[in-house]
Length: 457
Image (cartoon, rainbow, N blue to C red; front, side, top):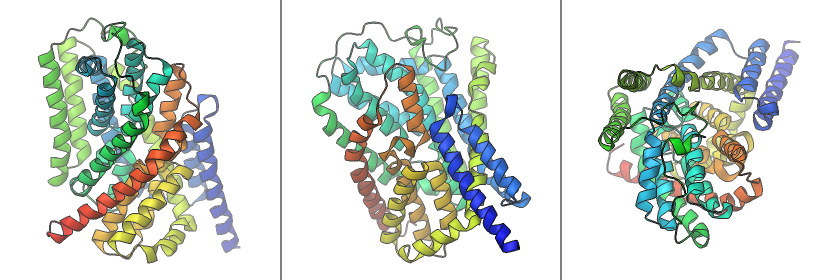
């Protein structure tokens, strides 16, 4: 009887997982992804598959990562409210100097840096409307806008691979395998950045013939007022702000310093989320003091739902792992994770496939829990995890369902009356993503092999 009950619970957990994913993809009536995650978590808890002690463990894994990402997002919202990103867009338009090719490289650099200094979801939410309005201001036709929008979305999402702090699930996974942010960056930044350069080069080759050689003059100047439609702006309340270039540069230096301090904190074993909270608090306080603007507008728009989504999905995945999925994966993959080469290419390829089938967030959670149960060399274990990050952050871009950031990007395009069919997206992603994943995995293997050969690991 007890065995039969356990089988029923396992079946319930599996069905709950797939039903949750279905609602996240479908999003009936615009339902937020946090709602199905919360419902699925409640069902999982009610089944008894996750205990109270498991909840405490989950809280320690998810809490710090969610606070870090929310704090980073708040910083981005503060900068958006004072016109910082419009200043960057105006600078890019000026530096493009009428060249569509030069604008391609600048917009991709912007998307890369946005994710590097903030996070992938924030990069998509903030830069996509700005790119749409910037390209419209250049009076480009929709087919001429396509290369900039698609390449920008791919680069913005993939750019969370070099450093773990740009993606919440990456941060959660670091906790699971007990790897510091500093160590992850030391082993991952070089190969992942080379992979992103490779991806950008491939996108440039694919889109080269479609890029306008000469850009028309801007139809409107690029100011916060010209971007009043941005979804993060409630009104034109900050249009009259006149912040000097020197102050904008000082703000940029502050953001750079706060980002660097995260890695310093990780190196000296200070919780990264504390530093992120201090950074967002200082920036909010500066805006309040300088412009007499209370922080409630930013706090209201902060993605608090990310706590519910992350916590809910992790509960479901934890229950799924307890239902035997993790044990099954360990049995199937253990023989292949025997050396550095196999660990990197097998786990990276597997995560690419799982991410496109299940979405990269639950897929990476499942994969990391599986790795944590494997008994293998610590270096091989870390290399396998980093390979999974490549599969989760880059390999997941093969299909629009692979990441929530891509689904969000498509939703923003639809809102701005730029509907993009999946076929148009996959026509590009099928060309550039598989070779990029293989190239980046090869760079990861070469880099880790080099570091270990000179005793730096």
